[in-house]
Length: 376
View (tube, rainbow, N blue to C red):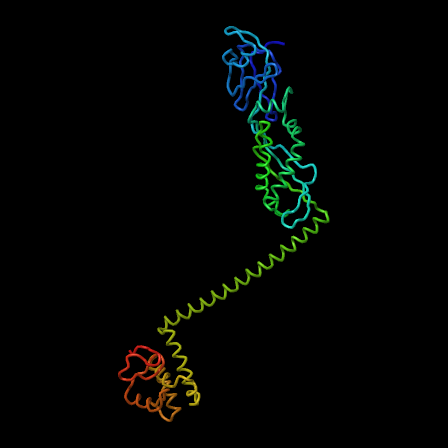
């Protein structure tokens, strides 16, 4: 075999490890390692020197471990026998995986026994070249992506199933929620598998669960699905009814506020208060009644309505006075709860009435003895 002067590898990214076909080199040969590679020298089946990216001249000082084995002379050119493996460090994505059989587990929410299948993609990258070469490659010349996955096939079939069930149960996901939680499920399974790959010098950089196969047609699954959706429909209906009730209450409350605000604006524009409006109502009812007995049965006395006249204005007061005059035989006469004599005296002396309850003030009263309203 001829002695090689340049050692390099420029293969594809679907190969993890490639062994250089030549095993005889000169101490002056050039070793070229790309940025995404590492080169490992083996001597007598033993892994010795590891070279990173760059151009390396194979000299005695650059091969300390090999020099100890073969005792290469310094200076000049001398041949030596070794094996060189190039390790691809790029992240290799799009590696498909899938469960060959259904995964049996107990559904965490209702306790139904169910079986599902799963598939997806993952990505791997070499992190420890020496560990990968010793544990998996051995004496093989090439470790392709397909061959590596074939080595891990049985491992994946077992470990993925266990990790998938553990992830579903730890997150308490029912089978109808899985599609909405694929990202969390993927990250959980990835964390459970990471240690297994690292034992072989590999890093599981990505693990995606993209498809969940449900057991359509299975009688147990069909019963479980009917139960779930029936329960979901009942809960959803109750939620909708509750929301409608809240909306109706809010609508009624807003309507009341709007009406009260509109009425308050009306009073403000027309120049009267709520208390004055109530006085208008009392005066209007008093003016419309013809029977004196109805006034006497109102409980608060006609004097109050006479007092309203002084509060809400002369026009309303006139209406009240007219009504009382018609009921008792003549205008200008008023009867209060205190008695006819008090009212007659009040009318003749010009006594003032309480704007709150209509009771006539005594000359010495500063506050109404009936309701406590301050005398104006």
